[in-house]
Image (cartoon, rainbow, N blue to C red; front, side):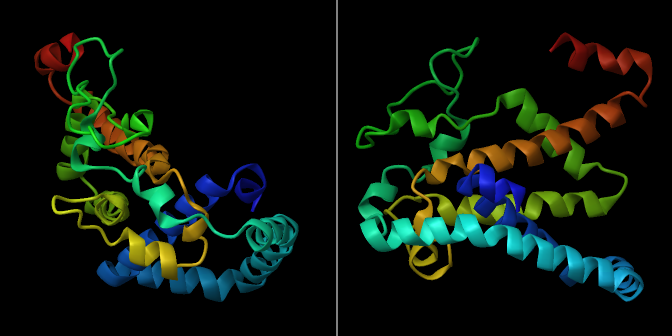
Length: 217
């Protein structure tokens, strides 16, 4: 609720990500289903009260968003199309990165808002996150990566101008208010750093001599 007051983009993206995460967890883990059922049975008054308080807190900003939408109309999808990531956007680091890796804008000759496509988080960060999720002792940690992959594939424009985002934009509540779609990278950054933190934790438990390479990098 507080996120809605500070910014709709992060409110919507974090809400969709959390909803997908819960669905994936419930569908794939019997242990999580049992824990959630126990939580609901034992604390349902608190959960219901929190939900009601959250919904009441959302009334005022939601009303303002809807008033603006009624007076100005929803943006045309053409305005959103340029800000949808291309596959290369996820690795684009901009011109200021130290090594120059992924800095070319040649992959985006037709895009006006090229700055929105600087979505890369760095090669080392991605490798650490990949290793963290693949080799995590608790396999349930991998669930954090699933919504990120699903949403990333949904918003990306694939070769042949293929994307499911237009359907989402037209049919999922709130999606029509998202213009800078590429800012989903903010949510993805959190997921990447969770994986990187797991990898560092694993590395710190290894023999000291094996730390030479990652520390050097």
